[in-house]
Length: 354
Image (cartoon, rainbow, N blue to C red; front, side, top):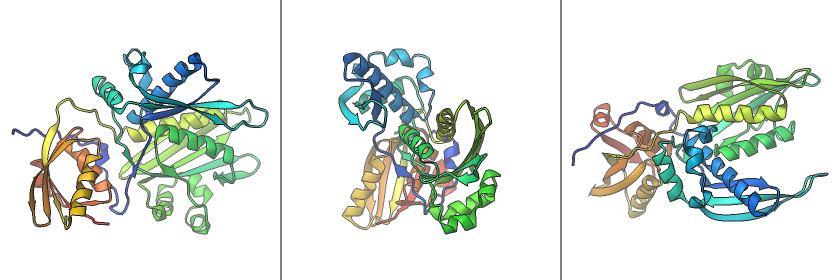
């Protein structure tokens, strides 16, 4: 069979420490939105919102519904729905009770839409981020934001990150954090200090978000991140703090996701992958399971087993570089591929048994 190889040298190839593993995100084909009631009108509106939420999670683009043709393509939401359910939410003080509409969508239908529209796809194996948040308050001064210091902010932040399907954690803010990173160093975006303080958490990357509120109530701030060798920075302004959070989160996640997405190809590329140190049948099963769950892998075939070496052919989409990074980031495979072998479409990894 003639082999073609798509070598797309994307930002995803940035160095990632071998002891760090990405996090497999679940629930990407399910959406959850608040609705006023359980009427048909509310259900239809809620399903549309939930479908938009799913497409944003899968593509990593908060503006995906503005892509030409998408609104028309999803106008009949029944083509994509697999199941619908309702859940009552606890009423807040002085507020009426709310209802949550939970919608699961057909993976096959959604994947077909993404390929038909040539939308970007963000794999479910996503980087886990360590996020430092600093607030400069006129009364109390600069402080790190945590669940204890500003719970309403962190709750809103958490909900938005969950909606985007992006795993993260906040620091512990214990004595070790206090000694390794001062609030002024964080506010000053001192990258070396932030990087040093973040090392203990073994995350895939770190984010620093800072903000303050003006005398007129306007919220201003900026975010900066480092994932591997890639960095990003942007300023954010909003009329209120409540509006600032979604602007900051969506801008941040959009920027990060752009480094990890790929456009699914109509034609796939075939390459050979050699896995060493497959010492048992359970290792064999684990290797196949690890490969089969990657969205990049369309099909695989085991064509040889020699001692502890397993040889497979994979049909992939998105490029060899993305597959190589995804396998290394899994934490179960250590890359042993030479540069010459890589350019001939052959990858070699050692299996890390657990």
